[in-house]
Length: 303
Length: 305
Image (spheres, each protein chain N blue to C red):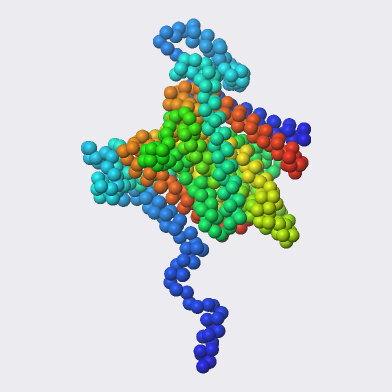
């Protein structure tokens, strides 16, 4: 009797035990499960690309295998799951290898650009005055100069390569970090523990590195994640225009550019790389939004 | 107000100069500009004469001033492909780009704003859900891919609309949709959040309590106040269109400035490319300046900040 009563109150307090489907559902609502899975798949694609496909992404597998549709279509074969392109290269293999370029560009641009941006933001925010003024005008400038036009001039002058694309993108993607880190540094440096560190005789470098940097870290992670999608999109635009990483290296943008000349005979050549970009960008945007809401409620008002 | 105008003016001129220095610096980094005109008939005398004309023996800054002085007068040099003044080549392409930009600008507002209002007013319904999905896709869809897919559906599969080049109004539909897509989505998102905020405000609650009809509340009380954010944003739309026209014109073989710039890259046509870059940057900065000034006139808070 007593047991029954306590069981009843427990049920009242915590609600009926949830069904498994309900638990899974609420888990996917709370955590970015699907974006997470997509990003893991992309990472596997990028790291293990040569192990995942036996096809060469830059060369046709067999003579006369060009323009074969995906396997579910009448003329398709399971040999080429997503079909082949106009040169007979396996579309899936090119998408898998294309992941490498997209992620490599995104991570190197955000890695290097992030470090530059953080350094500029810390210095600008900590020292203030004329240094701050100069650095922030530089940020304003990189935000105002029309990126795509500079990219075209960049392409006509420099030999197209992965490095030149990365350098170009770094010049236009460090500014977001600098702005936000500066704003946070301005706040953090007024706090007591920073003042105490200064009294204790810590050098500006040490204060910035040991006391302020850890405080801006979550912001940096959020900005980086939210920018991955933008960098991937912009890289693919450069490749599409023919001013990105040069052929025959497989990039998603260039695949769409090639594929659009064969729309009447093979829609799959342009369709699948676009889906790859779409899902990649969506996954990183969702992850970034989730990180922002979880790590950094301050940023919520910004967007 | 004079101070505000002055500051904005200096800023715009600064960006213009910075862009021109980047372009000029890159063009000189590419090597001696005389190589572009070099033919097998060039004599040493002409070669030296060119050197004098461009001031190549003088410091970098002097060369820049000479180059910029010509550019301001509209002299970007002779197009290496068409062998006429680059200015002529560029001016021919301006109307096509302007038409496409204007039609897309209108489309982005006409599509984005009403759907944003609908999405906010019918919050939580299927309309809201569709609106938000579109806003999400607007950020993540590669614009050129959208263009290619529109061609695939409407031109190749259903044969309803022309796939490329300029012509009657049907030629405008697909390029306009492609260029306006992302901006319309951004407009929708902004209008939605502005509307939601206003609909929650005290004066709307008051209007409700005094018994105003629903359309009256939405359009007269809420909408007018919610318009400020999307209007401010419409200036920024133009910045997006700059990338957009380059991409869209490439997809649809639209004979405008963007496509001209891309072709100039492949033809190694330096004079035309620099001309387009400087002209488009100047137009963009001028438009932004005008928008800023309009806002300062309309909204005293901006003027005083």
